[in-house]
Image (cartoon, rainbow, N blue to C red):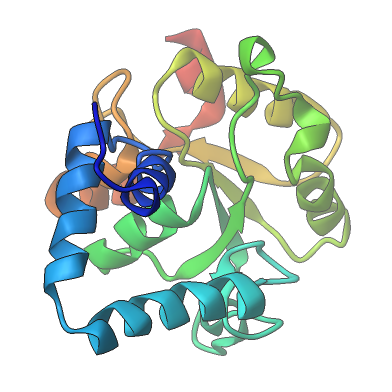
Length: 205
């Protein structure tokens, strides 16, 4: 792709580094920004700058937040005895949109994937185990995607919980194998949460 401007080329290159954005799509986005009023582009730059500089991760569940403890964890109406284990913030948003879950979350920040160089210590598993040790958690819901990496992560955490008095369940397999939670429709995901099954049964099946 030939560029008439080095400034344009640099902007397209940076935008194309985003997931799912190729060079042609990046060029279309950059040219769109050039056609907009300068104030609109500056608003985008300011929003991204503020996001990077001021965003926090909840000290309790590791969800993205504007404050030290996120609104979900600080909500007195949430059931603090139930914790749903998810991969990232997109899964929290997907489950919250169903309106069927009133417990807390624990965001791992990924899944165990040796091929990608991601091991247990690269995730927030240790913080999760510490949370269980404190004794307030009565049930853990495994809500990772039904992939090999998701199942591996679920099983690893399950083994770490050996000896703890905590119930472990997994969302019902209304979510297809290899499907990501964020792409599941709200009705299916809501039913999967409501009709969760003991994790031991999922292993046997």
